[in-house]
Length: 405
Image (cartoon, rainbow, N blue to C red; front, side, top):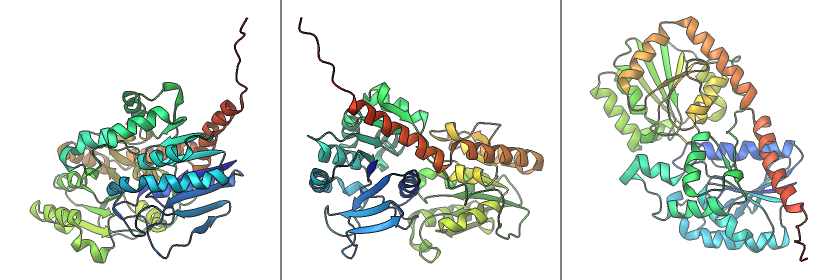
């Protein structure tokens, strides 16, 4: 099967950790490679954001990344890319007139907008993965949401027009129903984890303190790192390691890093908080294995790959009971739930878990087994392929002609 993935701002080639480069980049890259391993020919179509980028880059066997002209060939924040989606769609349309794929898989709402426009008039099925929904972002971020004003309306349009939607968690399915997405066209396929890299055995980073709490991911307010710093006040003797954001040498210029550093000083725990900045993806497993517990307590979370990576390493997790966490972490079995924005509840839970090494071992072991069963990229690719094949079967089905008699 020839598969064209559209990922307008999240390129597999991007350096993960920047403001607009995170889980979606990893997801698109890993899914493309896993599908290619199943025998498919995959092209990832992303916006050209550097004048020196070649038109086509071989990313892996069976996978190419192609840079599509749309707007200026420089980095543009994703929330300002909507103005360039007509040009992006025109480029896609031109490509698909001469090289139509068997299926198009759009990642993020603006990619869906361009993909549906580019495929209009043809017979190419379009699969949509939103990765995050504007309705949820607006609900929690309110005035701090910098998305285009038309995002929610356009997402509803995409949800109703796409041939299939792949949601990454069951919580998202409820939101999609509000958008008017046809129930029979929504399928839940989670994000995946590289279990060859993220696994319980392997090197562990050295540490000095008796207990280490780890939180990692994008360094933005909604991720709730401030909640973990506040909770640290009630967990004496433990250190908190925060990984994510820009390179360490640039942390002093990052607004969120400065805010968190200031909060740690105000709460008297600055000597127990370490902000590492960006950690290379290949270095994350050894950092994760050095922790006694990994914490992920965002206000909302479309999926939440960080706790799943920690689970894959056999490290117990505490997560806020929101969004995708409700799918990935079974409370009391593969990890623990805590209300979002409740540092007091988080501190109490951390104290109990750090005092109980047997509980930590059992949670970590169950979590690692759960990830190996459900969240490998091989499993995710197979489930995604099943959605593609369902569309192909529908497209090849002969039309039923009513008997005029």
